[in-house]
Amino acid sequence: MPSERLSVVVTRRLPEAVEARMRELFDVELNETDAPMSREALAGAMRRADVLVPTLTDKIDHGLLAQAGDQLKLIANYGAGVDHIDVATARARGVLVSNTPGVLSEDTADMAMALILAVTRRIPEGLAVMQSGDWQGWSPMALLGGRIAGRKLGILGMGRVGQALARRARCFGMEVHYHNRRRLHPDIEAEHDATWWDSLDQMVSRIDILSINCPHTPSTFHLMNARRLKLMKPDAVIVNTSRGEVIDENALTRMLRTGEIAGAGLDVFEHGTEANPRLRALPNVVLLPHMGSATREARTEMGEKVLINIQTFADGHRPPDLVVP
Ligand code: DGY
Image 1 (cartoon, rainbow, N blue to C red):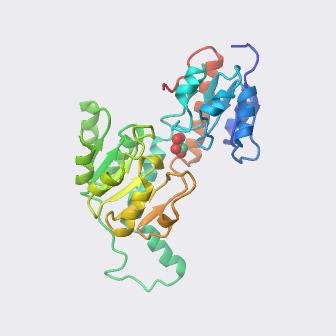
Image 2: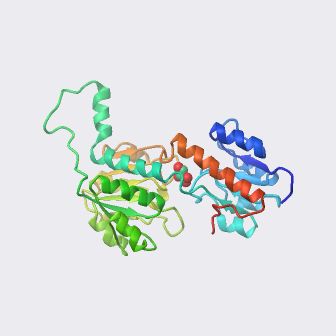
Image 3: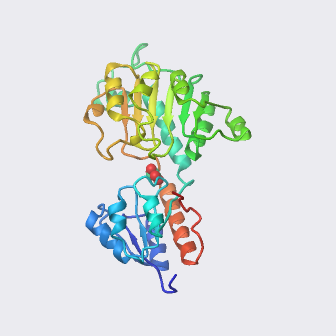
């Protein structure tokens, strides 16, 4: 690597302390407007920067990577998920990709738990009653939800977030089940008192609440397709704080409308910011604007990880959070 300061382009606003440190360490271009950069602007950045710091709102695909200059050596993603980056093409072109795992797991698991509670205990409907000013007082039969203690939670993807959710679920008295490509070490399984299902079909047909916590990859796209959604019990609930593409959103919307699935809590959507309009109209659905990691702490620690990844690379070593295609 050249000995002069690395040139770094950051595509979105980051916490102030992170931007300040970027300025100290690197020759950095910050996006003062926070508007997502256009494809042309991204291509331009990739032609001049040594390091690009994108977020999940930047699609770094094959076409864009083909326009990158030879000086681009690292894509230090601000975020854990890298499904918006063609990591294989980047690697083939000699561009490393790093991410920020770990620091957002607890907060994302909190949001999954919040969605489980919001849907099963009908919190937004209660809020709407209070906001309308129409509350007529306590009633034995008003806004009855379901008890979560004793219910079976199925976690699809038992990585960091899945395990953080398992810890919370146990405190709420839930039974924890999980499906993962690889079974956890028996000690970790015992720590979570979690039951492993080799067959996702079998797990989804038995649980009461399904939480999606696996990344979006070609093999997890529409893992919850119409056929699998139909295996769920009609009183089951599904929550997703990972990536929308893991669920066939049209199929889910249909089944929520027909009552084949009781409710859903979604922080992410198949088409990015375009939550299916028919989903928005359903009372048994809670929608959030991708807030899983939206705490000041997580967003700052994500920035600190980006800084470490870039600085380690600048020092001639492998970034600690290197993503392997
Ligand atoms: C990530 O880091 O990929 C998260 O989805 C951001 O909240």
